[in-house]
Length: 275
Image 1 (cartoon, rainbow, N blue to C red):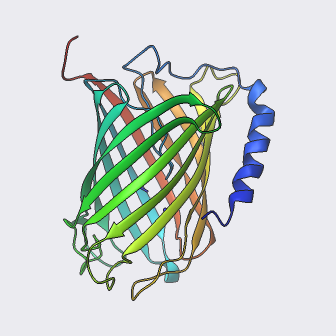
Image 2 (tube, rainbow, N blue to C red):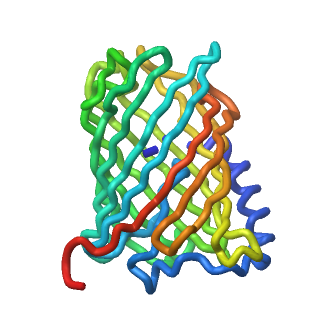
């Protein structure tokens, strides 16, 4: 959950390119404004959009990612996020994962929770704007590589726009961790620029997503160089309330592993409140 912008020029070039094709993308997307049961995927990108699940509704996101590290070692993770609409413009997210580190056995990763609060709709320049504070608990094992061994507090700023069917989500974030910095850096930042939309002529069922994201360099005993990576792949809307995704992650710079991912997003429906 997934963190200033050393490669903003890449994102801005992509923005201009996507906007030029926006008028060709006439297929319909899920009508989240009028259908509370319509799925609102935050997968598969690192970025999060400013949209929130309708009050009383539950949405589940789950996936699997296979990371290929140096010396041909492989790790696997299975992130899961439960999203519940608390009220209009407010969403509770609970997230966790299982992790299989390279050369190690499967283990439970860290879990956490956060609240996405959309403060503005269609505002000048920043579009739909939301904040997403979250906390992560050290339920995983730092010794076995399934967690950081730290309690993390984070804040994410989210700006979302729509260019005639092409979505653009921009995020910047900051994380502060407990501990002495020996297992994970005490301070970390994040930036993302994500884009997506339907392929023309598919009635909105088949789409695409592309993202450039970065983790600026961190310091201390567990510090690492700056990371910039690209993510992309197809999406498939099987039903208004069920979507699938798959794709790959390619490093541009830094110790980001190459990865393959796949997953699904399912809007369960209303589980609380009036029908």
